[in-house]
Length: 347
Ligand code: DAH
Image 1 (cartoon, protein in one colour):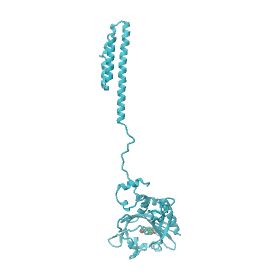
Image 2 (cartoon, helix red, strand yellow):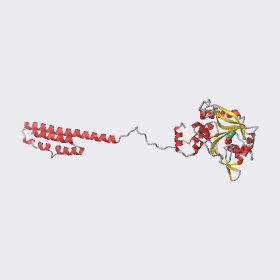
Image 3 (cartoon, helix red, strand yellow):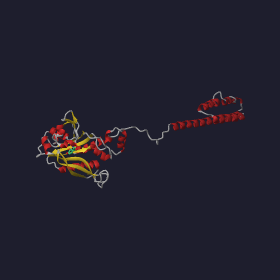
Image 4 (cartoon, protein in one colour):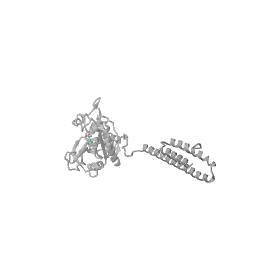
């Protein structure tokens, strides 16, 4: 009997050892530990034994049962662990893999520079205003002290529409006139006007038939050239850094007297001289001056009582300087790679 039990145990443990999956293991469990299995079958012989034999046989049988149950349980745990490990391996995420790039937009660099300028001027009490791109000769030239036939008109090769009285504005300066007329003699007048302008320029790296200007105007009592200088200082420092210094050079515009070109110290070489500033240490960023008495008068402001300054920035030029762009056409070609480059710059 003892041998029979030992053989049965060996046979069962061997089978359990070689089992391939949980299903087979369950089959073996039923085969050996089930009601119709050999262990149960042996139990039925118990009643034929004497009490002493019964005890020994019972112990052996219990040992057999226990060892088969333990072997099955430990095998099951192994299968379950293997299954879990396989599942975990399959679901593993490699966090070091580069993520799929989601295309996103980038700020339009020209809009950005205009917003920066607007912000500084608004903080000084200026209004941001708009004017028509299709303009009358009267506002674009005549009321700015540039009468018909004046040679200064040649400098702004203008797109005329239908006849000579309607045109695509060649500058944002007409908005000065419109703003003063609208204000109807009230002061102070403080405005900036960013907007598109058009000239019959051949497109090259620094010229475009369409470009953006930012016009500015301030009219009040006792406004002097030094106020223009102070205002320009603030904007230069805000846009190009606190160590940026400014200077005025004499110039000529029909609608300002005196007229100046406004320069900032070269932020690339800090004024020492480099290719950006053509070794001068200075970069010109706008035209400006004191509003001409004829312009003030034409718009209803007595030049004996009121004075003002005006200026005109080229927005592309500001952006090109600030972001190191060397071709104005960059702004008008819809090449998304350009905006990606801008995105990486600190804008
Ligand atoms: N409108 C001028 C231009 O297009 C720029 C300019 C110069 C604007 C002087 C002004 C100014 O308001 O005062 O070249």
